[in-house]
Image 1 (cartoon, one colour):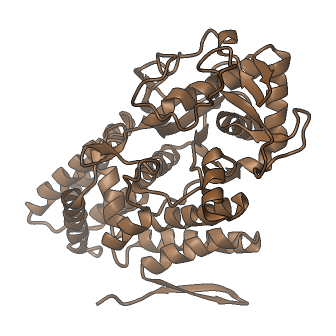
Image 2: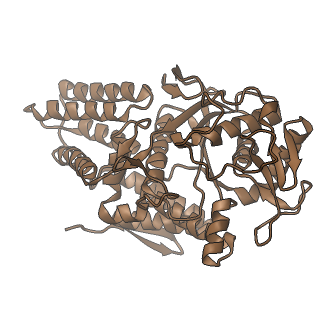
Image 3: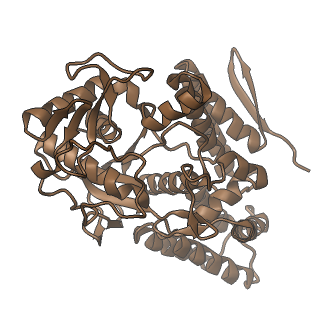
Length: 459
């Protein structure tokens, strides 16, 4: 097992990564609220966690990557009322779009997408335990978590109160709450809103409880890695910690917390709620998925970044330098010992950078240094260089290298995954993979004997 260090938001320190089970990582990342098109801020976070999952696997871990789909929420209900469409139709439409967008970006590493509405029983069970343990109280509009009952509240973010920069769209206002920060666990039924008949009464879950009920269902009360964007730390992730640890009496909820920096446009956070956003589909109409993906992975996941024409042009130029180098490789050449050593040393340095909190810009810098050195040599690049580039592309997924073994293997895996999804009647997810392959110039032909594929000739 490789020795990996990660920056843990819970401690504020870079720590050696030691999952509870030696060779296994249970990883949860907060998924989207499906009330509208996903924007490139989501693309940044999910591309960077897709890379993290890939690298953990490349380091010898068996990774189970869980992501929730928030399909029961105030925002969906408001959009439903605005458009005169049932909330479940709004949620289904934008969940389908989200999965298609992720496939189009090459983010196919998630193992399970868990919808909130499929876990109502688990949500109710968790709230009942909070009530029994004295952490929840009832008002006329539902059940609330009592922050005063959990003294450790604030240990993730280092604070307990709202600030002007916080998103307050899901802060549950009630003049009757015991504490200003108390949040809704279960919201009582309102006319025109979806509801469930439960032991808690008619109603629907609050936002925060959906995630912990889902993670407890799949991973139990404690697991290895929780991820999300930095703006979710407070109050959302802080609420998750309080709920799960209060309900189970076990801590920590997650051993490591990792947060991605925000994507900014003209110096402002990109956000659907403010209208200041570029959808993933609009971005992919302006540039190809490899360039967009490379733009995200050329930045450290914890860094905020600007996405603009200049950023995209730099990313496009960088990946083309690597692709152009790959086209000079002679796979039939017999490498000298020096040639092989250069490639081996470059891969070792890249891995050392990535072992240090997934330092993707540092790893790419090491790759470019190798390319500069190799280009100065009289001996042509051979199989060692090809293996290096293919190994890098297995992780980054940002290079178009025609005819490479990696490219064909990656397509084979996606075709197999699509066949599996079709057999499970998950047609939207299967279609999303087809769309991704089509964008890569791959033609699929379904037949009773199975699925054949080939690549279109690109002029």
